[in-house]
Length: 281
Image 1 (cartoon, rainbow, N blue to C red):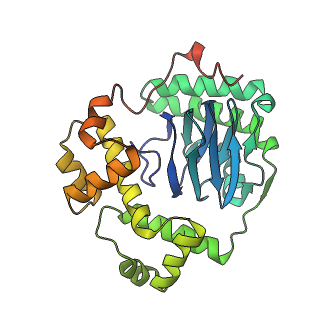
Image 2 (image 1 turned 180 degrees about the horizontal axis):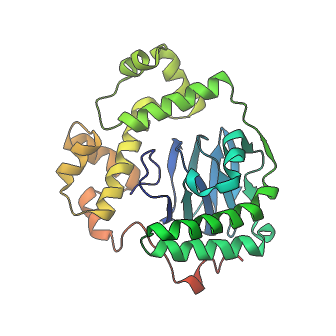
Image 3 (image 1 turned 90 degrees about the vertical axis):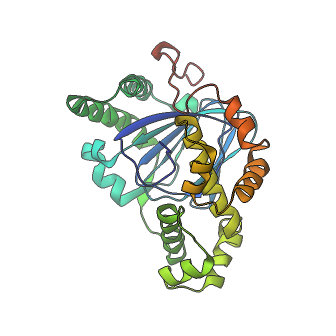
């Protein structure tokens, strides 16, 4: 499963990533990202936050965000569904953190305990009767960290709402043929204004962004399936093997075949509970 796409099937997941990089995106889950080693820049709604070892950031649903690695790093991402929020659901829908960044030294013990228990649950496939336990631990986590986030009323500008609409459409249709003209027609705005959003707000051109989204989709499938590369690049929306290979080498620094040979484990990796976040406390 790819944590960066809107279509989520699980109510709760934990993912490990090395040297996390991903352009602006958004989804319907609550995302909590911990830096276990190294440094990471997280940009949320255009504002950058620099995380170092042990720090974490809390990203509410429908907040546009991106990741850029400052150096070698190891991160763990928790993805939580709305349905787990319990009494915090209204706050999540109504507010956003004005300070989503939490230093490692400020993480309460209750938060770390909840994280360890949730990670243990995620190690196994959740059964229907595990939902209540999972929700309870999520609410313990929220009770510990929400006072540190300084929540403020959601108040997106018209420009930010348009960015959200644009990214939502691309993430829902990236496997289809997409052009600026198609986006302009579907969103009822000028293709020149869309191009302006990419170059000035997202700091990447449309074609590069679309190729990166498609590439990440292929990479996640390479980590979790044995499907042929031809099937994968075609499913992702690339129009030829040549264009796929070029994008892959430009971003990853090796060919798809070389990368597949280097894969030693699946994308989702969970350490033993006793070792979880030993670098974050």
